[in-house]
Amino acid sequence: MNVIGHPYVAFKVFGRLTEDLVLGSYLPDIVPFVPDSVFEFEEIHEGGEKFLKFLDESCPERRDLALGMICHGIKFGADKFSRDIEKRFEDRREEYGKRIADASNISLEMASRARFHNFLWWGVDVQLLRHRREFVEDLVEKILKIDVAPVAGLLAECFDKDVSAVQRDIDFLLKPLIPERFLSVRGLMGIWEDVAVGLPEKDQIDLEKTEQLFNDCAELVEDCWERILRKIIAEVGDNLGRLGVV
Image (cartoon, rainbow, N blue to C red; front, side, top):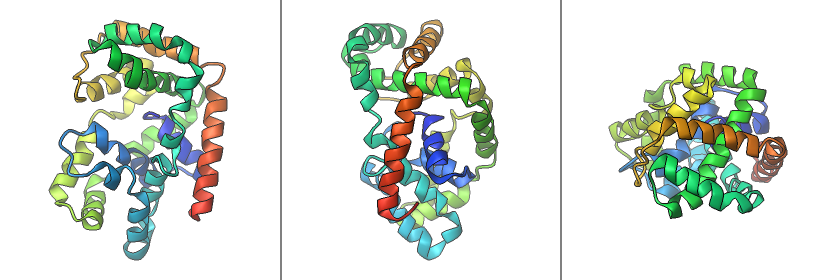
């Protein structure tokens, strides 16, 4: 899932949108999207339960940070289901893989696998922008209020990391998330351009071709994006209910 989708799922699961829930829904992507992160994948992407226990004992008013992380992760959260979208459009993988490879200057193999997944979810984000505008505007307001420094201190204490290294990771992750970018397709594409250039493949985005792909992926998922999100929200809610945090 992507920059609108993850906080949207958290919002629907918990029935609220706070700065901590938004930031928590982004934190798992420190790995893989931040180069040379101080965290291992299991710590930050799948460490929400550990962080929740820590916060409940030491700073319960910030527990939304950990809830957002859990809602994102693979074990209980949205990422457990996020590749289901690929199966639905398996017959378009080759076609879109070629277009993505051309637009991003990457190998056809990478474009047809990981990037196909990424672009389908950008299509869902475009649909959310079109049809859940009020949510996106609220999300922008929450992002503007995020204060990284105290969050870095809490994560550093919980996971026994250097606080300056943690702050660097969070700052790097959030840097492309310029609030006004969330309000247009071209802006979302700018977020992806900044994120993708930092990936191991160092994608070089052709802006015109990528914008067309974003819009075409949005059209591709038009008939099913709401159904897909409802299924993810319901299953994540059930998982977190069994975990006892909803």
